[in-house]
Image (cartoon, rainbow, N blue to C red; front, top):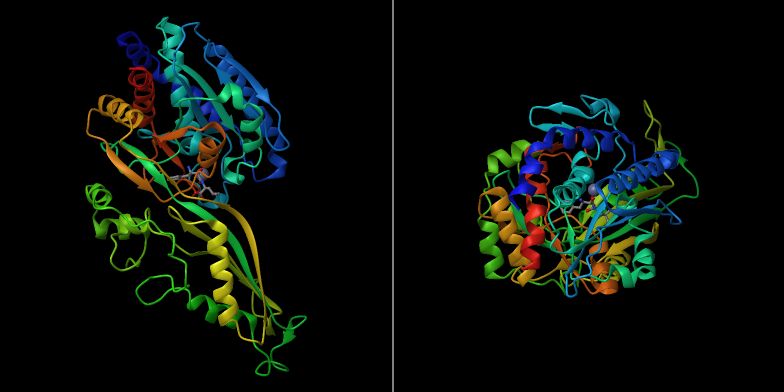
Length: 455
Ligand code: BES
Ligand code: ZN
């Protein structure tokens, strides 16, 4: 093991250069003009895996290709098999003008590497590859078999991956999946995440007049769909931040005392948090701490609100329609379809007869919740403890990784979520960065993890 750790220590400079090469690909899955960049990035990954000594190939899909790479298999029977999942696609970099350095020109700033995808998720999945490289290059036997699945559609809903898992079910069958695509509260607080929120996406559209109308000639005699939508949306939360939709909380699993104690261990400074977010004051459901609100309670978030004229200057109209794009984050054991049904019924009841209501449902995923007390979870905690040299925390996280539910359904495998992103990594925002000390710690954690999981 010492050889493996020494190898990692000795090669950090090269690893950082390789991460730069990886980040340089503008692998934006959402934007069709980047299709060739997606393919180039996947090919780079395959070549990189082959270089390390993995049996790697590119697997085309109806969408972006999936990279499949396996460690050389050992004939020993009874060896455990783990899958490492990650994604090479990144969020769109816009707005460009807010980046201090170009998003696809990775730049060192202190102990961080700045670039789109550095943290979400290239740096995190490369850390696992580097750990395996250390074993293979030092001739140290890997204690388990490992299969890497690195996809290119995570940021757009992983549309091809479930089919891929089904198709490769036999070879992907594993004891557990390891994913580093979540966060840790601070550099000295490594974490095992045992819960993620689910999601239900939908759009609410109100239609009024058959076309935009002159607001001077007709305004006052017709309902303005924008006003009607605002009135409707204002009814969603009560003054205590609770969602007022009947049935919305029906299936919500309450937080246990143990969980509240774990969350209360996290360092939290209200003033600092407010300043970091740039808000004059925090707001959330009464009776819960901000860490509880943003990880273990469901939400109803308006992601976009559109109606009428958005151009320069003014335009005097009564708009024909108004639309809200919404995602509700869900917790165990809420069902996306049931939530959307409850939302729809509520909107229908409160929608005035002066406009027509349409609710379009989009993607959805259930929350993920797994016991942090399993033998594998304990193994992961031991790996975190020795890689970081401090006591790890157990986390519930507010983000979603919908595919982890499919790992359970299709492969029968639980997921160990061992994220390396810091809260200020600016994931999905301008100036995304990845901490290079955490890159190194992640490699150590991964190297130690295989020992602990095989024990
Ligand atoms: N890495 C994130 C998920 C994440 C972030 C989990 C922070 C926990 C903490 C992932 O890349 C992501 O952004 N997922 C989307 C999924 C959605 C589009 C269905 C999300 O959570 O918004
Ligand atoms: Zn993301």
